[in-house]
Length: 317
Length: 317
Image (cartoon, rainbow over all chains, first blue to last red; front, side, top):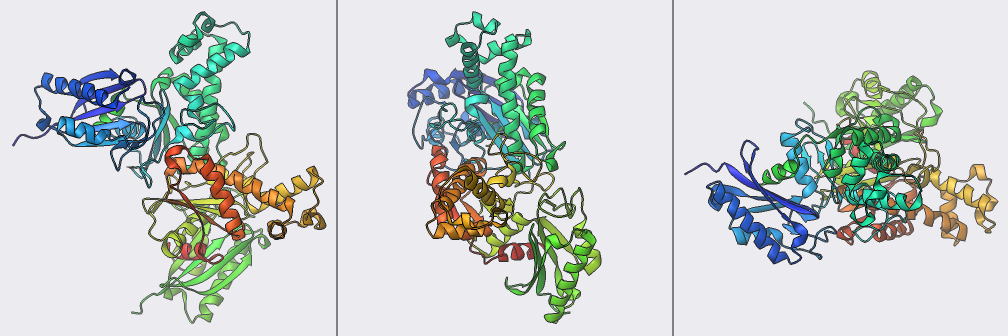
């Protein structure tokens, strides 16, 4: 009998879904993607993704029998049931969407699911900057804000598997509307979309000259804000400062919860690199209670692009 | 060789220190206390408590050799080193106060320490309303606000043993001064002292007639507020409503962190019973993100007085 050396990892994001075939050494040997929002009907999505996975397997001269299974990282995944629940940033709404079963039936392989941020945390712990850490928090700064909390070397899942929804702690009383239906969540400010909302607000509320005024507000992206900040644009810098000061302050509360060795920033916004890391760290440190000061690192993910989520998801099976 | 059937539990609070001898069935067979604030010098405190412990052992016809050891629950305890670190509500300030070693040398027995709220959580898990629960959060509402977080049946300790400082998440930007040196902590509002501060503020800020106006402001206690609320006093009710709505809202963030089965309220303020439980639960439930609604209980501790802390502390050894 041949040794089964590969598994499939999949990262479902609000914008893109990335699939990869991962070797047992932790290398992504094949990779493909679909635009999540192109598939408003769940069945179409499962079919499109499955076809891409089959094509990748074929390119690698593998079949479904040659892989350990499919690990999926997805927002609001119920890891105990293999479903997605009320995920505000995905096109399919409602409770108990049985993605695990659907992929398992379609592909004929074992499927396990977890929160996308939990998957990223697992990837980081096995292959990234969190190697050897027993206590850390992964914060994913993408379309939304997610988190994966590791306590004593294990993912904190909680009673229903929904622990680590740190994007939805409330940071401003009666603040911005959030996709979850409430107001003032961290995600409404410190995600890529939150940065764009802050940019639009500040462009309207001030007369400050800015490179961002050359871009039509509805086309503005967090990447535009980053690019402008890198060119020394004062307004763009102000947007980043507001965003990461708020993130840092909020992280101080997370430290009071689980006393981690490090908080690791991951995802699109974290690509702004040292600028973001330092702003966040300084704001956190200034806000920590005395017993925690000087003890908690803020680090940037070492995983390339979506690798952390893919590798972490693949490690589920 | 005789079977060792007893251990000693000790609960160090800002106001009282309670010591008890606990049988292996979880019964407190002897109990005594000292006023913590009567001993500004740490050595005097250790001596006074040790003498009381020796007297209790003598009364029970036991010696130091007949007990498994001393378990201590104390605010800001470093469970890994047996020290107390910067505890704002205790008379002895500073870093690394070696209470564990001091008691161990004085009494000649094994000493283990943990956060007082962690000790309460252990007591509740072994003997109280959290029996059989794998995921819960204990909130202690006394002179300060503490917490013990249980994840997968284990205390969440964190990298340095300081996890679960939920009394010091910041709930009001630039809010009230807190004993920890910062502003706006949960503890500054939802502790017994927080209730008194709210009472004094409202008595000054309003003309509402109230039974509380018959008490000199500097002598007002949270018990007075409770007694007045029970008599239908509108101002006292308003104080309680403000306090426990804020607590409930904040609990919603804690649920997003660890997805517990229940949050258990313990300590002086929790004695206000169902009034407090329902206000807190309703405010929490209204604030939860949709995936958590209807899934998290708010319960009152079943442990008598300081029993949870004593039993939990004694279970450390």
